[in-house]
Amino acid sequence: MTDGTATAELDSALEKHRVELTGYCYRMLGSSFEAEDAVQDTLVRAWRSYEKFEGRSSLRSWLYRIATNVCLDMLSAGNKRARPMDLTESTPLAQAALSPRPDHTWLEPMPDARVLPTTEDPAEAAIAKESVRLAFMAALQQLPPRQRAVLILREVLAWRASEVAELLGTSVASVNSALQRARATLAERADQDRAGAVSDPLDEQQQRLLERYVAAFEGYDMTALTALLHEDAVMTMPPFDLWLAGASDITGFMTTLGASCAGSRLLPTRANGLPAFAHYKPDPEAGGFTPWAIQVLEISAGRITGFHCFLDTKRWFPLFGLPLHLDGEPDQVEEGA
Image 1 (cartoon, rainbow, N blue to C red):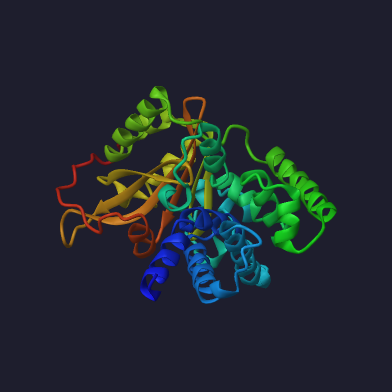
Image 2 (image 1 turned 120 degrees about the vertical axis):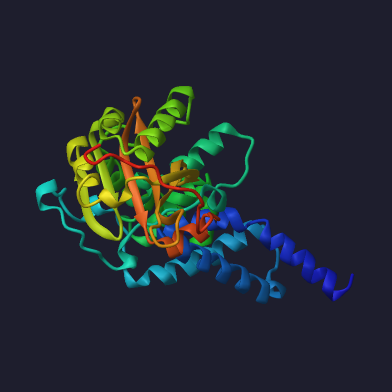
């Protein structure tokens, strides 16, 4: 076997683990871009030190050990990424103001394809989706880094306590203790979060709900949109710390501070195990439509409970593989619609 063939085979063997490692690092870090950087660092370290790999564990376990160390190093600064509702109280519409915070403040969206490995096991797929949803990701960020690693490895990836102990260089008792503390923190968070804020796998009724949502948003029909929103629905707009609660404040914002979104277009995508849309605003200068936000929707009991708009088009649309311009003419929307 030539050196070139061996190198190609190693590259291929490492690359097979990229998606699951990205999912792991994303859960650890709460950032799409930091997760991808962490995985790239992991694979480079593995490639450079492969000659020292003695095969006492599987290649997969070895990669997870490297990835864990990379993430723990990145988390040593203590930054916890969050949603707007984790940082402030909701703002009444009359007091709404758009105040941005630095990018490193926020929990970031992630395309499903980059973090959810292909699997034929429905139960395994469901756990993977649940574990990247925004509410769960926000709860993970409240855990100390090593507790976070233990919970992800044990509860999401179904590693045995002995395997986690070996990876972290600690005892099984220590792993079990960390897991108990992490579960207690997440249980407390679950009590604080609104029940049902996570969608079920999309069924026919939910698909119709999304179709009605697209029609209402693109038509900027606030009456139709109100009918789709849960009475306790929330709207967030990172990098702004403002968040709104209730259909009246959400639609009121959209017809005042958010009125420039009238006549927009939505393209379906998937993010964080949830239905999502790429939001394009009318472009008065170039014509057509220009990228504006990635919308991630939470659905429960036939209504939209969460409406999360991640602004900053220069980052998100390339990450999601979305076009940077749409042709076409915006519809005329009547004032006050």
